[in-house]
Image (cartoon, rainbow, N blue to C red):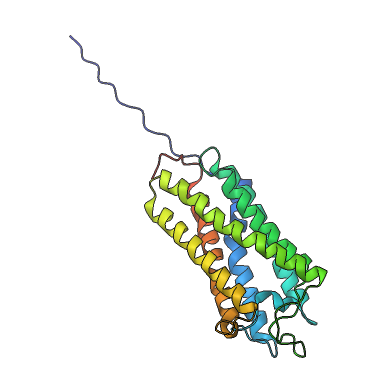
Length: 237
């Protein structure tokens, strides 16, 4: 009597993203560091500009304001490309639509921030009142973009938290949820500071930079993770 032993077939490796998808994800890896480096250097070189007090958007004012305008536009375009790449990698599966969509909304809000210049706030540029931002049409549209974009990124962190939890990737799930809470809190605190809340105004710029840096770090690491993991299904940890 002959006994036949069945050897299970090896599980094929997860497909790697194609060249175009990898290029789109690379946009997400470089976007955040480039944006942060640009506004840190520009802010350090501006006379009378206080990074601890003044918002990033105020760098778009004055003779050299075009530098921050370009920074907004380039960052937004790169992040929008990343959102497309993330969609290609995440589908099908949980958060495959809403995660990239919300990241795309965040990206478009930064493009709008570049298209519509903010109003002076907290005494910058020199000679402007030490008051909250005014209500020019451009400034109002700039603020409206922030009021849409920041919550969209918060929502993206929580949407992807569910995906990571479903994958049993507990570290990424906890990290994403924490980033969402920190980002939301920082946005509220910084906004109150720019509205001239006495206890917050002098460090409102710092709070905003910590908030933006936190969100951009999450996006950068997410892009790295998606590029490395490729098309692995949700069942994998």
